[in-house]
Length: 264
Image 1 (cartoon, rainbow, N blue to C red):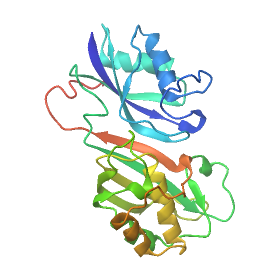
Image 2: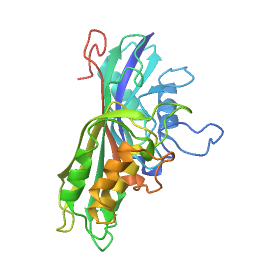
Image 3: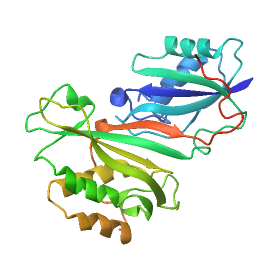
């Protein structure tokens, strides 16, 4: 028996989030789909471990899971066997053997999310599956200014709730910036990248919504500063749509036994 780490990518459009829904067997979740695939490989665990619980409709390029399994073949064969049993909208990108007490959530140093949006008056039926169409157009300069205020240690209570009742709402944002993406119908697409030591529930989507309000001139840049300096007792209501958000990667400290060998 060994512990394995797998990096996953998935399209979250048809799932009710990553986490298996207790008492809702008819609600599809990414976790349930992976566990079904693992059972076909002889896995008998009760629940796999994961780095985070993405919301309904949120995507991932670098979700990390871990599980214990008796596996007599190579890591590449493990990855291939998983992919053969997973639905088409979930893929195992990489498999590693890790130390027995590795935990993808508690051992993580930081997580990186990306949010995509584009400004267009008319809907784009294909692009809107993975991005938020915003209109009126935004001033990216204003959003840049507001995003720069997020870097550092702040109380983000205005933007989310902790995973556990009574938990801390202070997080350290290591980087936050907007950058241009590929054009959509001749209009610019923008990507917001944010790297932090942890995130509150729906924190990124609330931040993006606030940044868009600033970009559209509905709020001043100073509003973001006020929300960080004097957090509200309850999170603000605005929430950017889920389909624009992707969990890009989870970062771990280097060290012996963290990842012994990736699949080739």
